[in-house]
Image 1 (cartoon, rainbow, N blue to C red):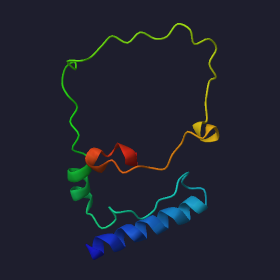
Image 2 (image 1 turned 90 degrees about the horizontal axis):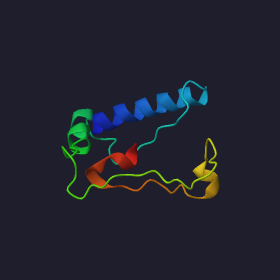
Image 3 (image 1 turned 90 degrees about the vertical axis):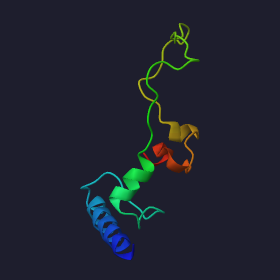
Length: 96
């Protein structure tokens, strides 16, 4: 596990140096998965299987007709609606 962690740390540091130079638009960081081989991570975190067919409680979606003019974009960060990442266990969507 230590060798895997060292490899990932080196990868993160190289990536972040490139991000400082504008090569990437985002930075990486060490988290609880840094010592996990990629294959193990995928097996653990990418196991979601979507249900096939309609849900028994599915309903028909009708778009609202009273929304008026909406802006083309909204930056939810400026509205105070963006919260820190929450670990949702094996769901994996919280890390996307």
